[in-house]
Length: 193
Ligand code: GAR
Image 1 (tube, rainbow, N blue to C red):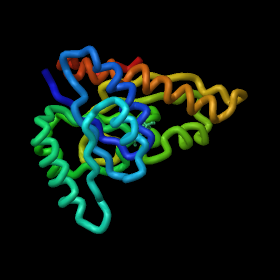
Image 2: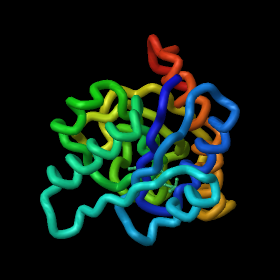
Image 3: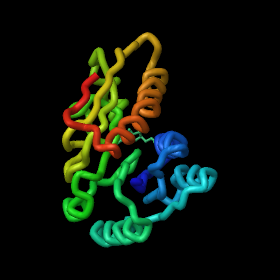
């Protein structure tokens, strides 16, 4: 029975989908870690009845913030960390504590367009396809072994907003399922759809 913590910085729509998906599971989304006081993810946690913990990165070393997170995770007996729009690079020191147990989602076909605006960068690239990537986290920016990718055609005539929505729909559909497979240790090779 794995206990999962979701890390988010903003809206938390992926956090919500994960929480809803795992409601009937033997595994649980037991905690939300957020690093921005105004993160809407916090409100979602309250509505969902999930414990949340704010960790500040302001005016202190990243190491201190991460040590605080590690303590909270330990207290909540967390086994797996699920990054969902957490806009921070995780240090190798942190990762040593959760080796192979930190997973992330990114809204582009990595290694293309890492960083904070994957959808916009994909759209502006002129590529004919965009998509999402779910991967294990290492100390790089959206790097780490890929577990899953799926893509959609870019339909320029329908505009950027629709493209963005379709990417988020992909995330909401696949992230909970892929996290579940990850928890069940079903990955022997990456799935590129
Ligand atoms: C998602 O699109 C996620 O892929 C992206 O942040 C968004 C968070 O949305 N993550 C990254 O760009 C990581 N580099 P949400 O807060 O509504 O789940």
